[in-house]
Amino acid sequence: MKVFKFGGASVKDAPAVQNVSRIIDSEKGNLAVVVSAMGKTTNLLETLVRSYFDKSEKKWEIFARFKTEHLAITENLFGEKGTSEPVLAQFTELEGKLRKNPSFDYDFEYDQIIGFGELVSSVILSEYLNFAGISNEWVDIRNCMKTDDRYRDATIDWEWTGELVPEVFNFENQRLYITQGFIGSTTTNLTTTLGREGSDFTAAILGNALDAESVTIWKDVPGVLSCDPKKMDGATEIAALSYREAVEMTHSGAQVIHPKTMKPLHNKGIPLYVKSFVNPEISGTVIHSIDHKIDLPPIFIFKENQVLITLTPIDFSLISIEDIDRVVIFLLEHRVRITLMQQSAIDLNLVLDSPDAHWEEIFNELKEFYTVRYNTGLTLITIRHYTEEVLDWMVREKDIYLEQHSRKTARMLVKQ
Ligand code: ASP
Ligand code: MG
Image 1 (cartoon, rainbow, N blue to C red):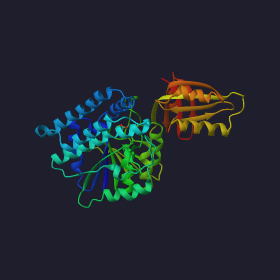
Image 2: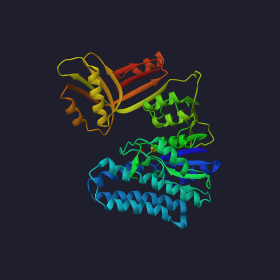
Image 3: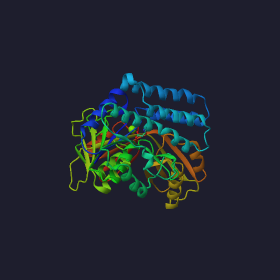
Image 4: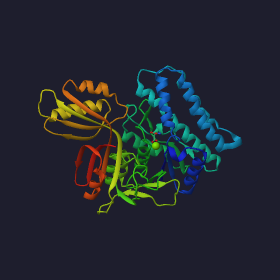
Protein backbone atom coordinates (compact mmCIF):
# COMPACT_ATOMS: atom_id res chain seq x y z
CA MET A 1 0.00 0.00 0.00
CA LYS A 2 0.97 3.65 -0.41
CA VAL A 3 0.25 6.84 1.48
CA PHE A 4 -0.49 10.14 -0.29
CA LYS A 5 -0.59 13.46 1.54
CA PHE A 6 -2.23 16.55 0.08
CA GLY A 7 -1.64 19.94 1.73
CA GLY A 8 -3.90 22.98 1.91
CA ALA A 9 -2.80 24.49 -1.42
CA SER A 10 -3.65 21.28 -3.29
CA VAL A 11 -7.31 21.43 -2.19
CA LYS A 12 -7.81 25.19 -2.06
CA ASP A 13 -10.80 25.34 -4.43
CA ALA A 14 -13.07 23.15 -6.56
CA PRO A 15 -10.71 22.70 -9.56
CA ALA A 16 -7.94 21.83 -7.08
CA VAL A 17 -10.11 19.12 -5.45
CA GLN A 18 -10.88 17.73 -8.91
CA ASN A 19 -7.17 17.69 -9.74
CA VAL A 20 -6.39 15.83 -6.50
CA SER A 21 -9.14 13.32 -7.31
CA ARG A 22 -7.52 12.62 -10.68
CA ILE A 23 -4.17 11.98 -8.99
CA ILE A 24 -5.84 9.64 -6.48
CA ASP A 25 -7.67 7.83 -9.27
CA SER A 26 -4.45 7.27 -11.20
CA GLU A 27 -3.13 5.13 -8.33
CA LYS A 28 -4.69 1.70 -8.74
CA GLY A 29 -3.31 -0.13 -5.68
CA ASN A 30 -4.22 0.19 -1.99
CA LEU A 31 -4.00 3.80 -0.90
CA ALA A 32 -4.46 5.87 2.26
CA VAL A 33 -4.91 9.60 1.60
CA VAL A 34 -4.12 12.23 4.23
CA VAL A 35 -5.52 15.69 3.61
CA SER A 36 -4.96 19.07 5.29
CA ALA A 37 -7.43 21.89 5.73
CA MET A 38 -8.30 23.74 2.51
CA GLY A 39 -6.13 26.73 1.55
CA LYS A 40 -5.58 29.06 4.52
CA THR A 41 -8.46 27.64 6.60
CA THR A 42 -6.29 26.85 9.63
CA ASN A 43 -5.26 30.51 9.91
CA LEU A 44 -8.92 31.52 9.76
CA LEU A 45 -9.82 28.96 12.42
CA GLU A 46 -7.07 30.33 14.65
CA THR A 47 -8.96 33.64 14.66
CA LEU A 48 -12.13 31.72 15.48
CA VAL A 49 -10.47 30.03 18.47
CA ARG A 50 -9.33 33.42 19.74
CA SER A 51 -12.76 35.04 19.60
CA TYR A 52 -14.49 31.94 21.01
CA PHE A 53 -12.06 31.91 23.92
CA ASP A 54 -12.56 35.66 24.45
CA LYS A 55 -16.34 35.11 24.39
CA SER A 56 -16.64 37.58 21.54
CA GLU A 57 -19.71 37.52 19.30
CA LYS A 58 -17.31 37.98 16.38
CA LYS A 59 -16.99 34.19 16.46
CA TRP A 60 -20.25 33.93 14.49
CA GLU A 61 -18.92 36.15 11.73
CA ILE A 62 -15.79 34.00 11.40
CA PHE A 63 -17.82 30.79 11.58
CA ALA A 64 -20.07 32.13 8.78
CA ARG A 65 -17.02 32.85 6.64
CA PHE A 66 -15.62 29.36 7.28
CA LYS A 67 -18.93 27.82 6.27
CA THR A 68 -19.59 30.01 3.22
CA GLU A 69 -16.11 29.47 1.81
CA HIS A 70 -16.51 25.70 1.97
CA LEU A 71 -20.08 25.70 0.70
CA ALA A 72 -18.96 27.73 -2.32
CA ILE A 73 -16.50 24.93 -3.09
CA THR A 74 -19.05 22.14 -2.64
CA GLU A 75 -21.55 23.98 -4.83
CA ASN A 76 -18.94 24.08 -7.55
CA LEU A 77 -18.14 20.43 -7.05
CA PHE A 78 -21.59 18.93 -6.72
CA GLY A 79 -23.58 21.34 -8.88
CA GLU A 80 -27.34 20.64 -8.78
CA LYS A 81 -27.00 18.07 -6.00
CA GLY A 82 -25.76 20.74 -3.58
CA THR A 83 -23.87 20.07 -0.40
CA SER A 84 -24.13 16.62 1.10
CA GLU A 85 -25.27 15.69 4.61
CA PRO A 86 -21.88 14.58 5.98
CA VAL A 87 -20.40 17.99 5.08
CA LEU A 88 -23.25 19.87 6.79
CA ALA A 89 -22.94 17.62 9.84
CA GLN A 90 -19.42 18.97 10.47
CA PHE A 91 -20.69 22.56 10.51
CA THR A 92 -23.52 21.63 12.85
CA GLU A 93 -21.06 20.04 15.24
CA LEU A 94 -18.77 23.06 15.23
CA GLU A 95 -21.74 25.39 15.71
CA GLY A 96 -22.80 23.35 18.74
CA LYS A 97 -19.32 23.69 20.20
CA LEU A 98 -19.33 27.46 19.66
CA ARG A 99 -22.62 27.79 21.53
CA LYS A 100 -21.05 26.41 24.69
CA ASN A 101 -18.85 28.36 27.06
CA PRO A 102 -15.11 27.82 26.68
CA SER A 103 -13.08 26.22 29.44
CA PHE A 104 -10.08 28.06 30.89
CA ASP A 105 -7.53 26.07 28.92
CA TYR A 106 -6.72 27.90 25.69
CA ASP A 107 -4.61 25.11 24.17
CA PHE A 108 -7.36 22.57 24.84
CA GLU A 109 -10.01 24.78 23.22
CA TYR A 110 -7.68 25.42 20.27
CA ASP A 111 -7.50 21.71 19.48
CA GLN A 112 -11.25 21.18 19.84
CA ILE A 113 -11.90 23.78 17.12
CA ILE A 114 -8.90 23.91 14.78
CA GLY A 115 -9.31 20.32 13.56
CA PHE A 116 -12.60 21.16 11.84
CA GLY A 117 -10.50 22.44 8.93
CA GLU A 118 -9.20 18.93 8.29
CA LEU A 119 -12.52 17.25 9.13
CA VAL A 120 -14.44 19.34 6.61
CA SER A 121 -11.82 19.11 3.85
CA SER A 122 -11.54 15.32 4.17
CA VAL A 123 -15.32 14.88 4.10
CA ILE A 124 -15.57 17.07 1.00
CA LEU A 125 -12.82 15.13 -0.77
CA SER A 126 -14.34 11.77 0.16
CA GLU A 127 -17.84 12.86 -0.91
CA TYR A 128 -16.53 14.26 -4.16
CA LEU A 129 -14.70 11.02 -4.96
CA ASN A 130 -17.93 9.11 -4.36
CA PHE A 131 -19.77 11.59 -6.57
CA ALA A 132 -17.14 11.01 -9.29
CA GLY A 133 -17.63 7.24 -8.98
CA ILE A 134 -14.42 6.56 -7.08
CA SER A 135 -15.38 4.37 -4.14
CA ASN A 136 -13.63 5.18 -0.87
CA GLU A 137 -14.04 5.13 2.89
CA TRP A 138 -13.77 8.24 5.07
CA VAL A 139 -11.85 7.56 8.27
CA ASP A 140 -11.89 9.68 11.41
CA ILE A 141 -8.18 9.44 12.18
CA ARG A 142 -8.88 10.17 15.86
CA ASN A 143 -10.02 6.56 16.17
CA CYS A 144 -6.44 5.37 15.75
CA MET A 145 -4.00 8.30 16.02
CA LYS A 146 -3.45 8.18 19.77
CA THR A 147 -1.56 10.86 21.67
CA ASP A 148 -0.91 12.27 25.12
CA ASP A 149 -2.82 15.36 26.25
CA ARG A 150 -0.26 18.03 25.49
CA TYR A 151 -2.69 20.11 23.44
CA ARG A 152 -1.33 21.86 20.32
CA ASP A 153 1.83 19.77 20.38
CA ALA A 154 0.72 16.26 21.28
CA THR A 155 3.13 13.33 21.40
CA ILE A 156 2.19 10.13 19.59
CA ASP A 157 1.61 6.98 21.60
CA TRP A 158 3.48 4.78 19.11
CA GLU A 159 2.52 1.46 20.60
CA TRP A 160 -1.20 2.08 20.73
CA THR A 161 -1.30 3.90 17.40
CA GLY A 162 0.75 1.10 15.82
CA GLU A 163 -1.87 -1.42 16.98
CA LEU A 164 -4.96 0.57 16.00
CA VAL A 165 -3.91 1.94 12.61
CA PRO A 166 -3.71 -1.47 10.83
CA GLU A 167 -7.12 -2.40 12.33
CA VAL A 168 -8.76 0.73 10.94
CA PHE A 169 -6.89 0.81 7.61
CA ASN A 170 -7.25 -2.94 6.99
CA PHE A 171 -7.88 -2.84 3.22
CA GLU A 172 -10.25 -5.79 3.55
CA ASN A 173 -13.26 -4.43 1.71
CA GLN A 174 -11.77 -1.17 0.60
CA ARG A 175 -8.71 -0.10 -1.36
CA LEU A 176 -8.98 3.65 -0.75
CA TYR A 177 -9.22 5.54 2.54
CA ILE A 178 -9.53 9.31 2.97
CA THR A 179 -8.48 10.76 6.31
CA GLN A 180 -7.22 13.88 8.11
CA GLY A 181 -3.71 15.06 8.83
CA PHE A 182 -2.73 17.08 11.91
CA ILE A 183 -5.25 15.70 14.44
CA GLY A 184 -5.24 12.87 16.94
CA SER A 185 -6.94 12.05 20.22
CA THR A 186 -6.22 11.28 23.85
CA THR A 187 -7.08 8.15 25.83
CA THR A 188 -10.37 9.87 26.71
CA ASN A 189 -11.05 10.64 23.02
CA LEU A 190 -10.51 14.38 23.21
CA THR A 191 -9.07 15.93 20.06
CA THR A 192 -5.39 16.89 20.02
CA THR A 193 -3.13 18.30 17.30
CA LEU A 194 0.44 17.54 16.31
CA GLY A 195 1.57 21.16 15.80
CA ARG A 196 1.13 23.47 12.82
CA GLU A 197 1.95 21.85 9.48
CA GLY A 198 1.70 18.48 11.19
CA SER A 199 -0.11 16.67 8.36
CA ASP A 200 3.15 15.49 6.79
CA PHE A 201 3.95 13.84 10.10
CA THR A 202 0.54 12.10 10.08
CA ALA A 203 1.31 10.65 6.65
CA ALA A 204 4.67 9.36 7.91
CA ILE A 205 3.07 7.79 11.00
CA LEU A 206 0.52 5.97 8.82
CA GLY A 207 3.32 4.88 6.47
CA ASN A 208 5.25 3.48 9.41
CA ALA A 209 2.27 1.71 11.04
CA LEU A 210 1.12 0.21 7.73
CA ASP A 211 4.59 -0.70 6.42
CA ALA A 212 3.85 1.34 3.33
CA GLU A 213 5.71 0.80 0.09
CA SER A 214 6.15 4.60 -0.09
CA VAL A 215 4.76 7.91 1.15
CA THR A 216 4.21 10.78 -1.31
CA ILE A 217 3.76 14.40 -0.33
CA TRP A 218 2.11 16.36 -3.14
CA LYS A 219 3.21 20.01 -3.30
CA ASP A 220 2.95 23.08 -5.52
CA VAL A 221 6.68 22.88 -6.26
CA PRO A 222 8.34 20.27 -8.54
CA GLY A 223 10.19 18.66 -5.60
CA VAL A 224 12.81 19.75 -3.07
CA LEU A 225 14.73 22.75 -4.39
CA SER A 226 18.18 24.10 -3.49
CA CYS A 227 16.57 27.32 -2.23
CA ASP A 228 13.18 28.96 -1.95
CA PRO A 229 12.51 30.52 -5.38
CA LYS A 230 10.42 33.23 -3.68
CA LYS A 231 13.51 34.37 -1.77
CA MET A 232 16.42 33.73 -4.13
CA ASP A 233 17.21 33.22 -7.79
CA GLY A 234 18.88 30.13 -9.18
CA ALA A 235 16.86 27.35 -7.49
CA THR A 236 17.74 23.91 -8.79
CA GLU A 237 15.76 20.70 -8.32
CA ILE A 238 17.28 17.97 -6.19
CA ALA A 239 16.49 14.46 -7.42
CA ALA A 240 17.49 12.48 -4.32
CA LEU A 241 18.31 13.17 -0.69
CA SER A 242 19.18 11.04 2.28
CA TYR A 243 16.85 11.09 5.30
CA ARG A 244 19.66 12.76 7.19
CA GLU A 245 20.08 15.57 4.68
CA ALA A 246 16.32 16.08 4.57
CA VAL A 247 15.99 16.28 8.34
CA GLU A 248 18.87 18.79 8.55
CA MET A 249 17.31 20.95 5.82
CA THR A 250 13.82 20.95 7.20
CA HIS A 251 14.94 21.48 10.76
CA SER A 252 16.86 24.55 9.61
CA GLY A 253 13.62 25.95 8.23
CA ALA A 254 13.11 24.53 4.73
CA GLN A 255 9.33 24.49 4.65
CA VAL A 256 8.94 21.83 2.03
CA ILE A 257 8.30 19.06 4.59
CA HIS A 258 7.74 18.98 8.34
CA PRO A 259 11.00 17.94 10.08
CA LYS A 260 9.24 15.25 12.13
CA THR A 261 8.32 13.38 8.93
CA MET A 262 11.67 11.70 8.42
CA LYS A 263 12.08 9.60 11.58
CA PRO A 264 9.09 7.24 11.17
CA LEU A 265 10.06 6.62 7.55
CA HIS A 266 13.79 6.26 8.21
CA ASN A 267 13.04 3.73 10.96
CA LYS A 268 11.35 1.44 8.44
CA GLY A 269 13.33 2.40 5.33
CA ILE A 270 10.22 3.72 3.58
CA PRO A 271 10.97 6.13 0.71
CA LEU A 272 9.38 9.57 0.78
CA TYR A 273 8.54 11.20 -2.54
CA VAL A 274 7.96 14.93 -2.88
CA LYS A 275 6.02 15.55 -6.06
CA SER A 276 4.11 18.31 -7.82
CA PHE A 277 0.32 18.14 -7.92
CA VAL A 278 0.49 20.62 -10.80
CA ASN A 279 2.73 18.34 -12.89
CA PRO A 280 2.28 14.83 -11.44
CA GLU A 281 4.28 13.25 -14.27
CA ILE A 282 7.53 14.95 -13.15
CA SER A 283 9.53 12.56 -10.96
CA GLY A 284 10.20 15.06 -8.11
CA THR A 285 12.50 14.24 -5.21
CA VAL A 286 12.99 10.95 -3.41
CA ILE A 287 14.20 10.91 0.18
CA HIS A 288 15.56 7.50 1.12
CA SER A 289 18.57 5.59 2.47
CA ILE A 290 21.68 6.69 0.65
CA ASP A 291 24.87 5.05 1.86
CA HIS A 292 27.24 6.58 -0.67
CA LYS A 293 28.39 10.16 -1.00
CA ILE A 294 26.33 12.22 -3.41
CA ASP A 295 27.26 15.64 -4.69
CA LEU A 296 24.77 18.24 -3.66
CA PRO A 297 24.80 21.89 -4.65
CA PRO A 298 24.91 24.50 -1.87
CA ILE A 299 21.43 24.48 -0.31
CA PHE A 300 20.07 27.72 1.14
CA ILE A 301 17.46 27.89 3.86
CA PHE A 302 15.98 31.09 5.27
CA LYS A 303 14.23 31.13 8.63
CA GLU A 304 12.64 34.46 9.32
CA ASN A 305 11.31 36.14 12.46
CA GLN A 306 14.10 34.98 14.70
CA VAL A 307 14.91 36.58 18.03
CA LEU A 308 18.47 36.78 19.35
CA ILE A 309 18.90 37.06 23.10
CA THR A 310 22.17 37.51 24.91
CA LEU A 311 22.20 36.63 28.59
CA THR A 312 25.01 37.80 30.86
CA PRO A 313 25.05 36.73 34.53
CA ILE A 314 24.41 39.78 36.70
CA ASP A 315 27.17 38.80 39.16
CA PHE A 316 29.78 38.47 36.36
CA SER A 317 30.13 34.70 36.87
CA LEU A 318 31.09 32.48 33.92
CA ILE A 319 28.37 30.79 31.88
CA SER A 320 28.09 27.28 33.30
CA ILE A 321 26.31 24.08 32.34
CA GLU A 322 23.79 24.93 35.07
CA ASP A 323 23.02 28.22 33.35
CA ILE A 324 22.45 26.47 30.03
CA ASP A 325 20.35 23.80 31.68
CA ARG A 326 18.19 26.30 33.56
CA VAL A 327 17.64 28.60 30.57
CA VAL A 328 16.86 25.80 28.13
CA ILE A 329 14.32 24.19 30.46
CA PHE A 330 12.77 27.57 31.21
CA LEU A 331 12.36 28.35 27.49
CA LEU A 332 10.95 24.91 26.71
CA GLU A 333 8.36 25.42 29.42
CA HIS A 334 7.33 28.59 27.60
CA ARG A 335 7.23 26.63 24.33
CA VAL A 336 9.99 28.71 22.83
CA ARG A 337 12.05 26.86 20.26
CA ILE A 338 15.82 27.31 20.27
CA THR A 339 17.33 27.30 16.80
CA LEU A 340 20.94 28.02 17.69
CA MET A 341 23.10 28.45 20.77
CA GLN A 342 26.54 29.96 21.24
CA GLN A 343 28.42 30.86 24.38
CA SER A 344 31.46 32.86 25.37
CA ALA A 345 32.88 33.40 28.85
CA ILE A 346 30.03 35.49 30.19
CA ASP A 347 27.55 35.62 27.31
CA LEU A 348 24.99 33.01 26.38
CA ASN A 349 23.55 33.73 22.94
CA LEU A 350 20.35 32.03 21.93
CA VAL A 351 18.50 32.29 18.66
CA LEU A 352 14.81 31.73 19.31
CA ASP A 353 11.98 30.91 16.99
CA SER A 354 8.54 31.58 18.38
CA PRO A 355 6.72 34.43 16.68
CA ASP A 356 3.86 34.41 19.17
CA ALA A 357 5.79 34.05 22.46
CA HIS A 358 5.16 36.49 25.31
CA TRP A 359 8.63 38.05 25.22
CA GLU A 360 8.02 40.71 27.88
CA GLU A 361 7.08 38.08 30.44
CA ILE A 362 9.94 35.77 29.43
CA PHE A 363 12.57 38.53 29.56
CA ASN A 364 11.32 39.75 32.92
CA GLU A 365 11.81 36.32 34.47
CA LEU A 366 15.29 35.96 32.98
CA LYS A 367 16.26 39.40 34.32
CA GLU A 368 16.31 37.94 37.82
CA PHE A 369 19.68 36.28 37.00
CA TYR A 370 20.92 37.90 33.81
CA THR A 371 21.30 41.12 31.96
CA VAL A 372 19.17 40.56 28.89
CA ARG A 373 19.90 42.08 25.48
CA TYR A 374 17.82 41.17 22.47
CA ASN A 375 17.14 41.82 18.79
CA THR A 376 14.01 40.84 16.94
CA GLY A 377 13.08 40.47 13.27
CA LEU A 378 16.25 38.60 12.28
CA THR A 379 16.70 35.95 9.60
CA LEU A 380 18.74 32.82 10.14
CA ILE A 381 20.38 31.74 6.89
CA THR A 382 21.61 28.15 6.76
CA ILE A 383 23.82 27.00 3.93
CA ARG A 384 24.37 23.26 3.64
CA HIS A 385 27.39 22.19 1.56
CA TYR A 386 28.75 25.70 1.53
CA THR A 387 31.81 26.80 -0.40
CA GLU A 388 34.04 29.77 0.40
CA GLU A 389 32.77 31.66 -2.68
CA VAL A 390 29.19 31.17 -1.61
CA LEU A 391 29.95 32.42 1.90
CA ASP A 392 31.79 35.51 0.62
CA TRP A 393 28.90 36.32 -1.63
CA MET A 394 26.33 35.72 1.12
CA VAL A 395 27.92 37.96 3.76
CA ARG A 396 28.38 40.93 1.47
CA GLU A 397 26.39 43.96 2.59
CA LYS A 398 24.71 42.12 5.41
CA ASP A 399 24.71 42.98 9.07
CA ILE A 400 25.75 39.73 10.72
CA TYR A 401 24.69 39.22 14.33
CA LEU A 402 26.05 35.72 14.82
CA GLU A 403 27.82 33.09 12.76
CA GLN A 404 28.44 29.38 13.21
CA HIS A 405 30.22 26.97 10.89
CA SER A 406 30.51 23.22 11.03
CA ARG A 407 31.88 20.79 8.48
CA LYS A 408 28.90 20.91 6.14
CA THR A 409 26.76 23.72 7.49
CA ALA A 410 27.24 27.45 7.77
CA ARG A 411 24.74 29.51 9.70
CA MET A 412 24.46 33.25 9.91
CA LEU A 413 21.97 35.42 11.63
CA VAL A 414 21.34 38.61 9.68
CA LYS A 415 19.13 41.65 9.51
CA GLN A 416 17.84 41.81 5.96
N1 ASP B 1 -3.81 22.56 8.49
C1 ASP B 1 -2.72 22.50 9.43
C2 ASP B 1 -1.88 23.75 9.31
O1 ASP B 1 -2.12 24.58 8.46
C3 ASP B 1 -1.91 21.26 9.29
C4 ASP B 1 -1.16 21.13 7.99
O2 ASP B 1 -1.47 21.81 7.03
O3 ASP B 1 -0.26 20.31 7.92
O4 ASP B 1 -0.98 23.93 10.09
MG1 MG C 1 0.15 22.83 5.15
